[in-house]
Image 1 (spheres, one colour):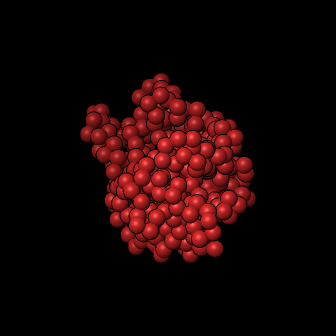
Image 2 (tube, helix red, strand yellow):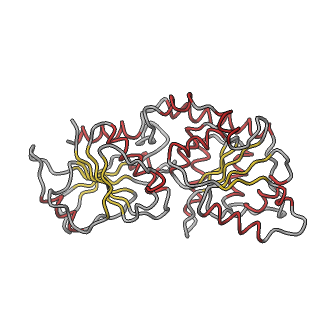
Image 3 (cartoon, one colour):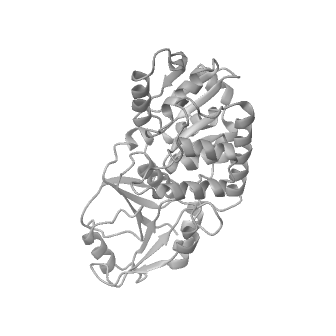
Length: 361
């Protein structure tokens, strides 16, 4: 049965939050559901999803409920706290079957132990405009006892049909070149990475727009005398839709990714990657990163790179990053592809979410 969905998103990280919510909305629309995506800043969708998606309306964040009331399912993404008036409308509204809308809190992605414990738990509201309602927690995750990861039904077919040599040729990347994509915040080890890549004549750095581009410019402007960075081949990329971002990850030999959405895409890409986790002021992200590396079964070299890239470990010398040789990257590739195989054996997030909705409806 096709349902009406309200998905709420408040943008903190301009790409990650809206990226996840858009993927969810678009996949629901592709399955015949009607989706209203309520977002406080939809500007990134102009390039992330320029053609929109069937069945999906993108609407400005609002403090009250629309005239026709809430949908059958209300998804509060990443604890964004929908407005009290909309919550009151959920409490008032009953569908033709006499049921109130199902209210789901779609949580952040983590590999920490609490995710399996808290996934699918109810949270009854004892006071306020939603008194008497139950909000359900739905946790994405990496194991069969979580809500899984977003994965389009045609993803494997698209990846199999991708012409990697042609893509690399079109971007001036040789068959034997080391192509590295950079999507980051301001990692502590960015300068040393530029120095390391600058020592290789075969390195090609592809830099995404926004904070990654600004961070590279800042490092270059402060480069030391006689730095190897000036020898590095750097391509500054234009903003690209989500499918084209996948192609970037598929085409490169090493991907530096950030946040939640691009981590999942890097896993599906199956290429070596280093993840910059979203930094939190109380360093809570340190435990989150370690839990992910444990799940990934990351080898020591990959753990060290993550520690240095995320500032959990300080470099002994400014240019002392471990080498990115063929043996190291092959070891990382084996690790990532084994993790992808484990994930592909599990249901995807949308399948599990729709099953949960059917169970509670």
